[in-house]
Length: 358
Image (cartoon, rainbow, N blue to C red; front, top):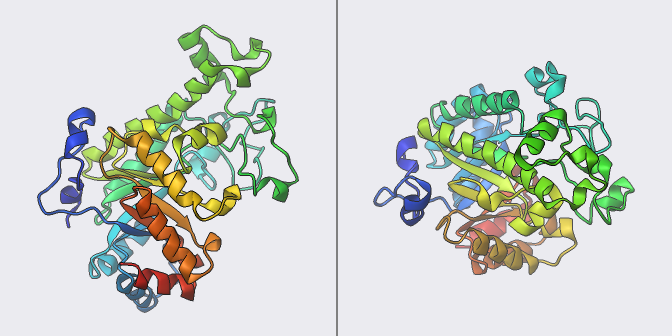
């Protein structure tokens, strides 16, 4: 399937009248079985061919591939030969390793207690968040997305870290960092930079520095939701002009995503959405996959018809029957497919499950 044909995703004709989405090309089908993977440039074509043959044998139809331009150009013919869609996976607002961002210290998000992510990396060293409200940051990110969309064989751009840093870390992760987040604390709350302060004041008339408890302000919360949403919508328009679709990896369902990382993904303009329903992160049983999927499906109803693909996490599903049950629960919850995170975590029970689930 060529890039512009893939734009016409299955089942989006109804929503297109509302959101201006592409119309379905007759006979074209949305991939339903996906996997995240990184392009290991040190692997030979033979090594990749063997691995991709296994993916094909398990009926994986699309990959969310992390790499660079050379990686995508190399991988495209290998994937095309096996009829597997290639989508370019990019980090959006977490810009770890971004040399251009590093040259612009003022681009970085600032915590409620005044620390910039340029030097302060919350939780882990690779957390280096930039501020979505800054025009220069938006231009930089959009430019990257467009450059990916222009690469031959890239049929979609896939956004990750399209949010703020976690203001409330998933419950199972808090003990790992020796923290208790029973409420929102300033050191984990972003972004309080001067750009955000001024733009929010212009929109609302409120100066966040004069608020006794900024976290209690619904207007301030909504401003940050909208800041990310505006960026995503600009990316959507830009990559569509290049003939690519836009997808995103997001937190399990919108209410939870808003609470823990300021992510209102049901407001985003997307062609496909991949909620990362990693039940063990939230100390939930496997049945939670169905619940969380249902929440997301319900929240996007009327906006998209068939975009929700449930993301599954291999360490949470160690047994073959766990993986099989998770896939069934995603379908029962209304998902149109599933995505596995990730290739590196796949073990024999997972491969057997994928072969067994039709």
